Amino acid sequence: QVQLVESGGGLVQAGGSLRLSCAASGRTFSAYVVGWFRQAPGKEREFVATISRSGQITYYADSVKGRFTISRDNAKNLVDLQMNSLKPEDTAVYYCAASGFRDASYYTDARRYDYWGQGTQVTVSS
Image 1 (cartoon, rainbow, N blue to C red):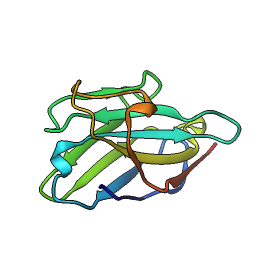
Image 2 (image 1 turned 90 degrees about the vertical axis):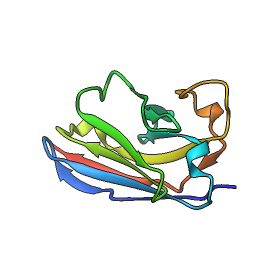
Image 3 (image 1 turned 120 degrees about the vertical axis):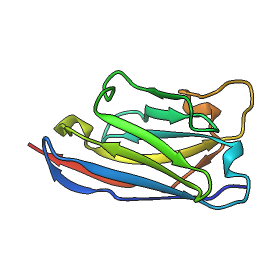
C-alpha cells in the first residue's frame, strides 16, 4: 500500500515556475514507477511525465517536454515535478500516481497506476 500526497501548487503568471512535490508513504517506494497526470476543467485526465523505479529513465508528454523535469529521491520517498516556462494551458489539477506493475520501465497510461494522490491545483494566469 502506498499513500501519496502532493504539494506545491498555486497561482503563477505565464512564464513563471512552480515545483510540485509528491511525498509517499511506505518502505518500498523504490519498487514503484511514478507518474504525474493533470486534469483541466471539462477535459480528461492526461499524462504529463513519468519516472522509472531507479530514476534513471524519464518520459514526458510532448506538450511539456523541455519545460518540465521529473525527478525522484527514493531515500526520502519524494518525487518532484519542476515546471518552468508555464503557460495558461498548463492550468489543471496535478496528480501524482504510483504503479506497482513490473513489465515496463515506465507507464503513460493512467490505467497502469494503482495509487493516486488527492491532487494539487496549478493555475497559470496570462
